[in-house]
Image (cartoon, rainbow, N blue to C red; front, side, top):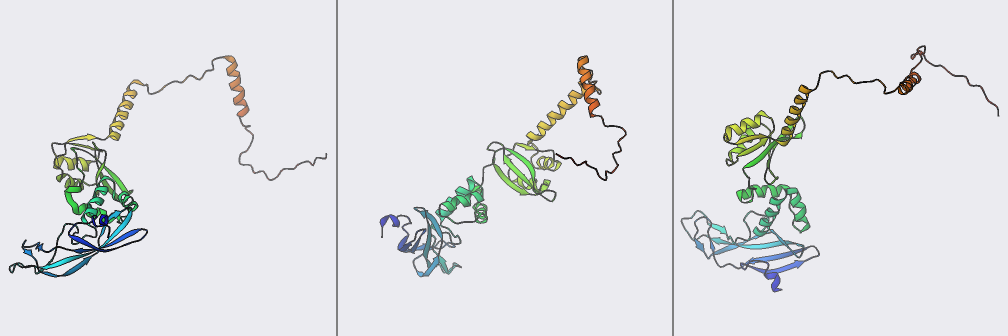
Length: 297
């Protein structure tokens, strides 16, 4: 077998065989380890019990999907005081419950962090990695703080409608990176308070005039500065200009309607006279029919 293909996988495995089609590779990997450590008591063991087969997906090779058939070794635990009798070796290449190899999982998470999960699904599909958006989202949640977006000390908070008049949510953005940090279900004060408790370093909150948001920030972060968002600042400015203009402008304004010359006055009167309707016409009178005189040519 080609040495290049063997170099794609850790030395803890031997590539026993592989198949290639137009769209994918299938590799069978056999563990060649001679000992393993019990995950419970950390005792080393050299007694092999059997093999367990796993079928994870790996990073693509030359643009083709990669499917693995990995035979992991099961060991007896030599520690009599340990409650675990059998365990599967841990090589760091495949997690016990994951459908992907560790290097494939890390790559997918890095893509999902920089874009949303649905966009990451499309990007990964072009590279031969099939995964759903819900799976990526669950992987990000399970990964924890390692792959969570870093929140600066300045955030913007506003509500938005899943369905107008029925279901609302809260959108939180980073004012420095202009990226969406989180989307919360609901727009009440308790929802925002629970989120703010996990981010005590926030110093500035830009929000709308909702009392629920102001009370949430005041209760959790009393030292944080609350400011109005751009829309409401502009609205406040327009209202202030409107009130200022009212103080200078009179309540009633006389608009001159006299023509500039006598000739213009005559033209205006003629136009008015032409557009006037005769007063003797009954608008409610129904016209039954009209007689026409036949013409001969």
